Length: 148
Image: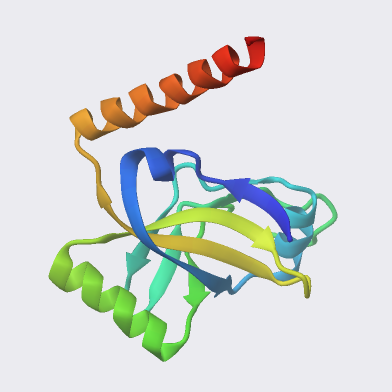
């Protein structure tokens, strides 16, 4: 598994309860560009359009040798999920107020591009401060144990 891009803010901004892997519909030049690690999902989000999920605002740089004249690097890309997984995600988004958050883009063992998405609820400001305190304490604890 080769990780292409990660969304580090996802676990900071959301309490992620369920993680799923989804396929992406991409063009050939986009896949070649991803092999060069030229993408970002920092500002991306997953949107529900007509009972289908789309990855929006994901930046994939134009491949240098591609002959495509019109290339939109932040176009909407359809996610490929099983019907059961799709219904579970759509139901929890509509009923329970969850958000679908992209976490990582990677190549699986077969060489296919996959997107790891998570179902999560947004954290409040005090939750974020608490997680930051815990992270800092764990760093200090490791330093103390290392020096002793």
